Image 1 (cartoon, rainbow, N blue to C red):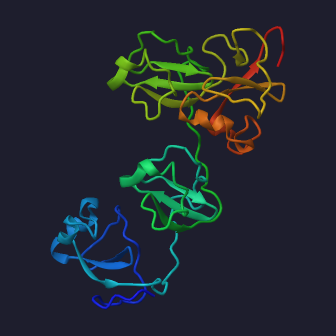
Image 2 (cartoon, rainbow, N blue to C red):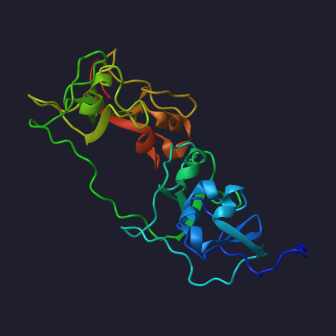
Image 3 (cartoon, helix red, strand yellow):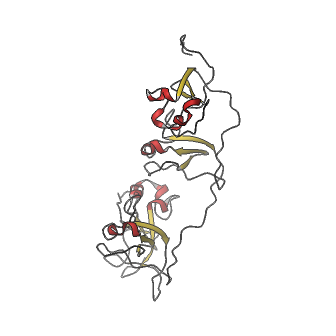
Length: 296
């Protein structure tokens, strides 16, 4: 263990400081093997990242009390207390995560820290020691019980008209992109004619409402209508796909690579393969069957 005669050795280390931690007066944390105690007279600042221990401003909130080595003897094991018991979705490298979002790595749950959310898509949880982006919450078992998926319930059953760029859409107007329904937001309706629904992350103009089937008015089975009637080329893992690319799956269905930031996952391997991959729905949208001179 390192020797630091000018400072008191406190034994095992308390928990590592987290910028998003809910600290109170007297709480102890570790940062770079040093132990800091939250000052009771300025405890409100201990919750602020700008007053992190070890910084110039941090001396207003934290008092250095010594150094440590190893870890404190554990009390109860940390646990993940989700509203619905079970593990959240597995971490997906490159996916966009926001502060507070939880992911699983095996049976361990991590939460993306709001102050460092920009790093969450780039750092694998648990891989970087003292990572400020992902905070270990505890173990989990099973999967989160699924809730009902969002549904589209128009006045007349079926999908609304397909989105057409340049159309003067107003707040509340609904359009379809494939079999996904989007609603134009009244607060940002000026952008609706110029933004393709689902193409931008966190789009304030279009809100995803849910899937739809069939067409409004006289009904027939949902169809895929490419520029040339018939099936698109079969999916191949050797081809690099981009936003909006369509493929045939199993000779009977058509899938489209999503038109948003998840399009990068269309080439992410067998787990994201359309129709067969475990995470197929993350990268691809099912458009139904194709009709035309070449039947799917």
